[in-house]
Structures are given as structure tokens and as C-alpha cells.
Image 1 (cartoon, rainbow, N blue to C red):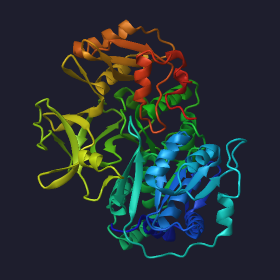
Image 2: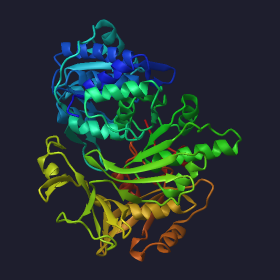
Image 3: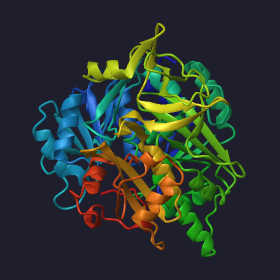
Image 4: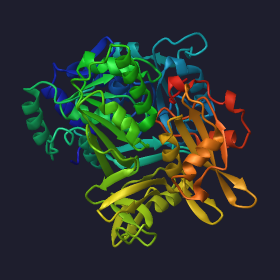
Length: 559
């Protein structure tokens, strides 16, 4: 559909006006309220000379205000810019400058960092603060406007006819500075709606008129989806799952905690009758499995009777953890290989009673496994190729044509997105996912896929989490090194883990170094901090002080 996404949301809002769109703890917004408040915020921003193609940074935690802010920016034909709330001032300044941000909507707790970042980025001229914060965090001064005061004072911005505008999603990856993926709303619409209409078996509407008609039909039966996105909205998985549920006549539920609490998630499923959970691999699923097991063992099992699907994108989700989750409910575990740049490439769906397999997927229509020349790899050959999917001509990295040319390639007269995700095509047509090419470890002339070794380590009963990296080695070029989180009630040694891997993989794949830590450092979206892991494995950071967490608390650590 070639429409501005604000027009898509307004179409749904008009039909579902009195239905609740979003719930955050004890607070809720109907569609009419969400639309009106976003229109008021848009009017204020318009008065600050924010308009088409201007960039507005959103540095907020999950909540109603995040949705209102995105909606308001889209109404202006401007571009929302996602900000990682863990960034320090220098990192924020880089992002603001790279995107040429004109305004920032931020949580008060991030105020001091935003203020420092703004001081070095002349393009930022408007600051809007959500909440009061705590001493030393909130920004003082008349240049900062309060979110609620702005909305209360403004009249709603009138509806307007809009064209097909642009959407920007920054992706941090595992190393390096964040990259902005710039696409059109025409690209955004099918990606988002696959996370909504695609889940409930509805054909994706091709026009606003079709969307209005489908919404009227679905509205008569209540909420087509009740979705709880656990990842942060500043990550593509959280944002696209949220928008997909809303467009498909669903309701969205946000957790209230600013750090991931699996018990809060499990309780919210029963209380809000959630049928869809969005997570990011084992980093979210493993603590949830622990919480469910613990509650059941204590005779207070959580009510998951409403749950129909658990969705994960982009990070390893091991078979054992899927089995543990499915022991507590009758739902499907839907594991997707995709990236902010495009896809999806492949899918795996596991139900109770299925033989769960880690990293085995089915290619989605249009996706391929190709070699460096763009030719399909031969099924059953064992050759490891690159996952590729059709890409729009417009998609690119903001301000980085070299990286754009590297990721978006033309083969056979067609443009493809090739993110570096590696896979082999099996004889039966399935694929084995080997992870990101940037994580290949070359040791003694052999290639080791870090994720393959990680998956074996995680299968060990004494291992809770693991991260594998390559360290420079004068003889072998690089040596395989593992950073491991042990299970608290197991005694496990480095030698036993090396032997465990050696029994299952070729000798050159076994770790030469094993360092035990209390938790793996990851971003809120679940991506591992590889620079940190290399420093720990090399002894540059004391392992006991590297992560302020215990194994029982899970691996996702928020500030």
C-alpha cells in the first residue's frame, strides 16, 4: 500500500475509536484518545517548524507516550528516529548528528545525557520531556517543554492528505556505530502487517478502503490480537510487532518495568488475556522458562490459557528452551530469521510434541541461499552460503553508500538484501542457520561458526548462557574462546566444557579458552556485546566484575 503510515493508523482509529488500543499497567488509551493526543503533539511540533522529512528522536522506554510520539511525527510527514536509552551522551550526540535530528522527545531519567548530547548538535532545537525524573536527571530551563503541558495546550492538528514518506530505523548490530536503515512507508506497510494480519490468517489489505472494510468486520468480534511486545520499541522487533498488532485490529500491552521481568510478563498474559508475545530469542525466553518452571514447582502456575503464539526474531532460540516453554501451554513458538534491512528469510514453527531443533528453518517465499556470485547453493552439498531476499530499490543506509552497496546487491537484474547471515541448504529443502558472517572465526585455516559452538555449549546442563569469540593467536591466527554463564546449582569446569564440545564437533571448533562470568552483556534487544566478550576472554576485564548480575536474574541487563 502506497500510503503514509499515519493515514493507515488514522483509518483504524476511525473504525475502532472507542476500543482500547494500548494498555500500560493501570493506564489505557482508546483509539480516539491515542489519535487526538498524537494530533495535539503534532500541532505543537508543527509550531516548532517540524515538517516533512524532519527527524524527531524518541528516547523513551516502552509505553503509551512512545506510541503517541511516533504517531504524531508520522502525521507531520516527518521521520521518527529510534534512540537506544542505554546510550551515553557521546553516543546520543553521534546519533543526533548522523540523523540531523531537529527535536528530541525523551524520558526525564535520560535528561542529563540528552542535554549534553544536544549541546554538540546544532540541528537539535526542540526538547520535550516525558515525566519528572529524579534529581540530576531531568533537564531544567525554559527551552525544555513538558510533554503533558504541550498536549494540553495544543489544538489537534487537522487531518491532511499525505504522500508516501520515509521511515528510518537505526540498527546497532553487534559492533561499530549504529546505522540508519532508510526505507519508504510502502516498504514498511507489508513488513508491519505481516506481524498482524499475517498472524491471524487475514489477507493484507491493499488500500485504505480495504483496510477500513476489514477493520469494520474484525471490530465486530472484539480484539483480533492482544499482543505483548517484550523487546524495547526502539528495536525493530518491538516496534514492528506493536504496529502490526494495532493495524490488524489488535490491542497492545506493555510491561511497566524498565528492565525485563519474566514474572511480570507471565502474570500479564493471564491478567490481560494476551494471545501473542514477542521476544528476542533465548535472552528473553530462558528467564521466562525459569519463571514458569519456578511458579509451577511452587504450586502457583501462571495462567497461559489465552496464549496462542510466542514470536522471536533475529537471535538464537534453542530447542531446549522451546520445549520448556511448551510444557506450560498449548501455543506455537514462531522463530524468524530477519533483519532491520529486510527479509524475512526463513521461519521455524514448533508446537507441543514437535521435535524441536535449534537453527533449522524453512526458507520463506522469495528467499534464497546464494554464493558470492549470486548463484543458488546446491541442496545437500554442505556448502555454506548467504541468505538473500528481494529488496526495494529505495532502501539504503543513511549517509553510507559503501555499506549500502555491500548489503544491497544486484544479481540477475534484481536487487537483493544480503545481510551476511549464513546458512546451508539441506537435501530436504530446509536450511541450517549458521549465524552472521562477521562472527566467523578463522583458526589454523579452518572456519568456525561462533553460533554453532555457542549452541552446543548451551545444551550442556551446567551452562545457562554462552558467547563465543575469536582471539588473536600467534600460531593459529585466531583461537576459539568462550565466555560462559554456569547454572548456579551445577559444578562445571572448563575442561568438561571443552570435552563436551569435542565430543560433538570437530576438534578445531572446541574452545581453547573458557572464562566463567555471572552474566552475558547484551543490548536491550538481545544482541551480544562482542567487544566486551573479547575483552573478558582476553583477560582485559576481570570476569567477576564484568556484569552486575547473577545467573538467576537472566542475561538482559537494563540500566
